[in-house]
Image 1: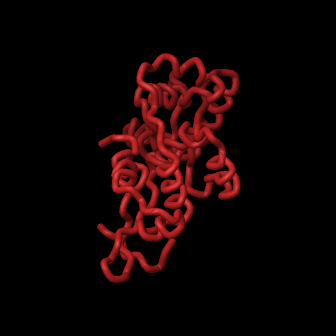
Image 2: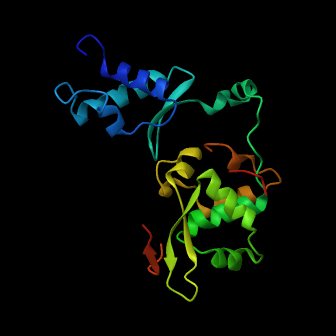
Length: 203
């Protein structure tokens, strides 16, 4: 490693992986004898992020780790490389996802109370198949309905490091009121009753 900068190794690994890599993933690239200390990794991340400021890609930290991604400003052109367009999701699905994200953990019945209409089984199935939500426990009431919460995949897709990075609920409502829900369909762009428990047609 003496002749190769740590930031270059990190960049090469992120490009080759094609997915977010955690600090542990990157540390495992090295034998125990040659593994740099954590502070060296943090310094390398900062240097790589600075290098990327003059490039069309950026270093982004999301829930699953670090990744290199094309800057959003280039998406109008880059998206034309891909024949298959991302699926468009119904307003009902996005409202359901938003309620789960902001009220988690929450049950299907609670979602229906908030929306005022029944939640389609297809919506829950689609969100589960996308890996955006998961059952995180059961509410201790008759029937013990499943409690749903978001996943790291949800955070990764929407370019978030943690759930606290979600926009304010007021901003989200403003977006939902728009005829187009593009802002929510593009990557970025708790309850004491729970007991922890140890794919796609667009609705």
